[in-house]
Structures are given as C-alpha cells and as structure tokens.
Image 1: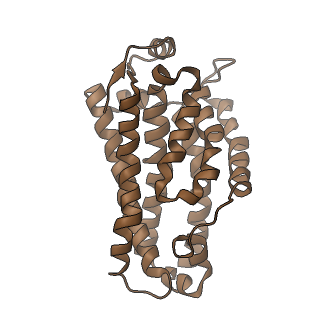
Image 2: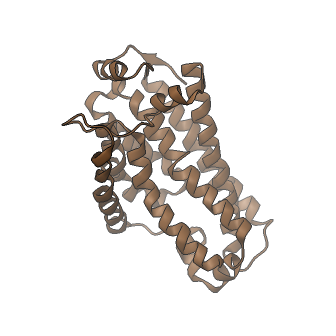
Length: 266
C-alpha cells in the first residue's frame, strides 16, 4: 500500500519542522489505502447489514438501524486499525512523538505569521458554522427511509428503541468517535493528505476531497454534501498543517447529535 515517491519541496519543508519523515505515496498506494477503507464500509453497509437486520428484533426500521450501527462501527474501528498499521510500518514505531507528527496531530500553525496554537484555534469557529450551513444547503438526495437515522428517531418505534438503551447509545458514541476523530479524519486528513503532495502537487487537498467523497459508497446520497467537505476539512487541514482542524470541524455535528440522542435515551 505504501508505494512512495521521493520527497517533494513541501515534504522537505515539513521535515525541516519535524524530525519525522513523511514519504509521498504514488497513485496506486493512495488508491490502495482508499480501497482498504471504502470497500469494507460498502460491504458492511450493503451486504452485512441486511443479513444482520434479519437477526434483530424491533418494530419498523429498528432492526436495520441496529444492524447499521453495529456494521458501521466495525468499519470505523477498522479504519483506526488501518491507520495504526500503516503508520507503524512507515515509522517503525507507534510512539506518540512519532505518531503526532506522522498524522499531523499537532497544534495548527498560521501560514501568515507562523504562530502556533493560541488564537489560531479560533479559525475552527467560522469553519464549523460554514460547514454546518453547507451540509444543510447541499442535502439534495435523501437517504432511503430504512437507512435514515433522522426518520428513525422521529418515529414512535425509534423513540421506543432508544429509550433507556444505554448499550446502544454507547455503540452510537463509538460510531461518532471513530467516524470524526479516530477513523475517517485520521485516515483521510491525518494519513493520506500529508502524503498526497508528491502525486497531486498543490491540488492535493482537492484530490483528497474527491477521494473522501468517493469513499462514501456506504451512504452515496451524502456524496453531494461531502464534496464540499474539501473546503472545510481538507483545505484548512493543509493550510494550518494540523489534522485537529478537520477533526474539530467534523466532530461538531457529532457532539450535537450525541446530546440530542442522549435526550431520547434519558
């Protein structure tokens, strides 16, 4: 998977800041990593979940909801395992000091002043607002009714399922955590983006956004909105050289949803 190119000027500049070398991936290496994340998610959503749904009890669309919660949690956790495996092979260690630099898990750095952290973190606020607004405006295609979580929680069957369901709520939180922090963002913005400059040059963040959109085979109706994510997740991550930017922006919705679902559980 980690077929690499010689270091580019951008990569050398990064190496000057950090002692951790980030080799650049060739196209086949990039697409291999993409496939290792996208194809299992698609298989879990479209092949495994329908089989599991037949084994779960519940009214209405509750069995499919349970199956998707379990299936997609497996896929998200797999992405974390994939990232850990790739970084371990590349860096030959999983020490935090190496992992932090290898996955851009450091404080954002202003491209203008060079300032690190502090007030630079404030850029997250307008990005969250813009990201949320864009997601609402570009929600063109609706999800199938039996796969739409919003439809589920608004139904009597969904409310009855979630009431007092602390175990299922914990699993939903696992989905949220590995989706926006330890899974998708860590893989696409933490691992892939810093290693795509050798193949895509200055357009690496655009290519990253397109790959992230195509990755959503498990929820294809979300692709139009996801296409805009490159402006709110990929580009700011590259500009500030910090995967925490994408993680924070992507996680904002999950935090709100977690609170809303908690109200139903309680």
